[in-house]
Length: 344
Image (cartoon, rainbow, N blue to C red; front, side, top):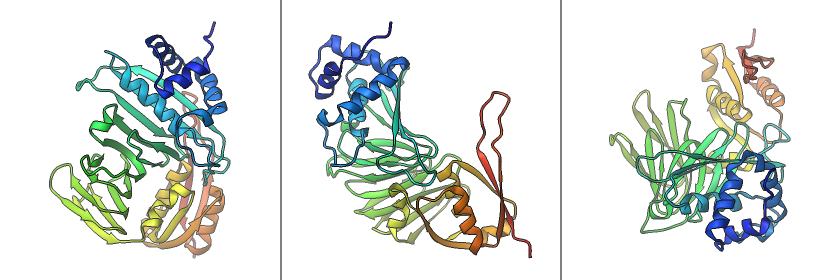
């Protein structure tokens, strides 16, 4: 018989008033996949009562859930845990994640060994979604589609996060403890600022765009370092081992967190790459010459079919949508779009 979740215990745990027995119960609820639905309903019904500052009118449970997962990870005695937490919104339209869309919660606990005897908290944003997060020091931000953010449960003593994918950060200032975003190619060190980092594992380019404040970018191989000023974009090409700094409008590169796709005189190859990530589709360009075409547009609340159609009105392309295929394991593959040069 499935154990019933006691909201009073869950609430007390979130506020720091609980016994060892209560802790054991809460850990068991989050570990049991069968409790997922009831946990979601319980927290949703009482989200106003948790001791977390919520912006009026913005029904976002990420702060509540991040608090619970961090507390369980950091306070469980003598057991190394890797907490893998996933919170995502269901999109009504493929392009825009509205603030009040339906959401679902999926959380699991995996006992694991750790060489440094610490636990990790992982926040994941599924393909085709955007996920808001808040870290234990008050730093907040957004994770883009298919991105992962990890940090140790002793985060307050060492403000360092590991990023795979794209994230926008608004870092709480602490002059004594710099905030560090670590990616495979580079580390971004700040005291308090707003900036965007794009570091997808399957892409050769890592980007840092500074919106406010000042950041220092250091190569993980110690071969380069740079300081950025607001409205500067740092680009590192891992294949060519080169780095450049450009003057940009930083708002353009953080517009994704507000549900906008903004392109300003960008190569068509980059435009289609970002659109493919946004909609979780595979876009194949058959003619390399099309990469040189530059495009300018802003999209909001548009279906993928309409976005590609609008691009074709001003770019010399033709396109076709392929149906999703199913592999031998019954898994649907990504939808694919073929882009061709328009016939003369």
